[in-house]
Length: 505
RNA sequence: UCCCGAGUAGAUCAGUCGGUAGAUCAGCGGACUGUUAAUCCGUGUGUCGUAGGUUCGAGUCCUACCUCGGGAGCCA
Image 1: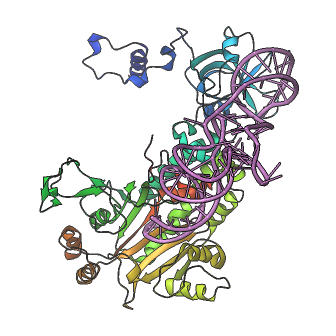
Image 2: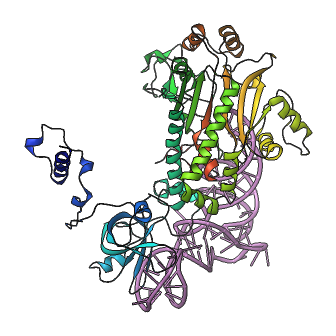
Image 3: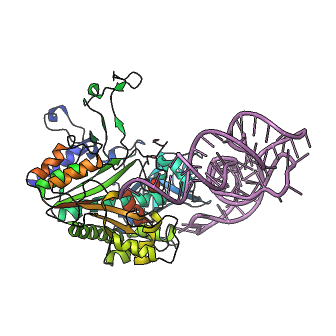
């Protein structure tokens, strides 16, 4: 029976759906074999093989079909070499074309960036540089590229490549960045799934601007040229949601609600901040991972953050080897050694008070003052993680005045149970806290900081009924990717970066 | 938003004392039986960011603006 189903399935793939079968669900279009899609009229007898598979698993002597984009073309009178890359791995496959091809003239004339479908014999390469190569029997120019193609074989500056973000993904560096990014995103989900964390999709559109994490982007359907007014002010009761709304700056508050039902949860989604930040570390749209645990305190929170961060380092080293080697040689010479050290390290933990003492005793002069009660500046954070500790360090228990209203107040009356994880080169990469679970203390703190308890009544309800000690943190996904790849600008680890004045692509 | 720097060929950059611009790579033409940032020969390439100003004369000096980059703040 199973065999019969298989045969039927293959028949479905070979033939377009007929009227008599239309009562059944239509086979998905993508199931139609590439073999039938050739526009040249020539039917390829082999299914497409990805370059990674061809190089890793295929045996010399087999005939395969690969499809991809030409990175470099080197031709001489009797032989032409094409490096074909399809994004499945950093390496391209070397296609060897000789004049016996019927369209050899066409092949020698193609430009960098052309899309090709190559059928050929996989064979061991007689020359150095690659083990295997593809001796072409047939080359179809699927999509040509002329000399206007803006990417050259030569190395380009990242600044220039940002202006062609739609094409830069075809380069070695950005191929590696986005393969690592994808692999790490999947590992984030695996990490939490293994620990029984619930993945929650918190809303993108929000009506609360209470967290103070940044300026909101406004979301509205009002006619901006003629907005409805009440007493000279815009009347948001006429807006789509009957209230002022914006894009979320954090999923944390909603994440806390879910933690009070599912115990351990996390969010992983886009976050938006309308700050006019012009730095290598800030984007207006970025992705953030925010776990939240009920029945947990600050130490549990730091434990989770440490396990999480080390796991991601280990994963990048073990499963993104080719791309990581590329970063280690081309982008950041000490990268692998540094990440290896972090993956094995025990992260230091230091109270804010001790950090201040250390900074005061430091034999260097800082541009900004060091005083208990003042926030740590970038230069201070860098000194702590790079000079004092020489590795990742949690700074714990900050003065309450410089931290958010929801953080749990410590018994000393001066500090809150906040933590920042600082790492060399990047600085702050994780920020988290134990949350204030005591209703009265939370309400008092909101009053002090001028946050409306009416607008957050749903948040306060979790403290009213079945409140638990709980804690969580936020990890900026792009900062993680920067740290793991050695890339120094956030705009180069996100596909189409949104920063002030930039929303193209 | 503040401070600093930059903007010259398709790309990366040089351009001296103020005298209307040059290198490399890419491109194009040719050569080459195995290249791999291929090599060799030949060849073309400019609103010098924009607008003013000083000057006999401005890529160069001055002013304003625009854009980009670095640093800072905000934070992840």
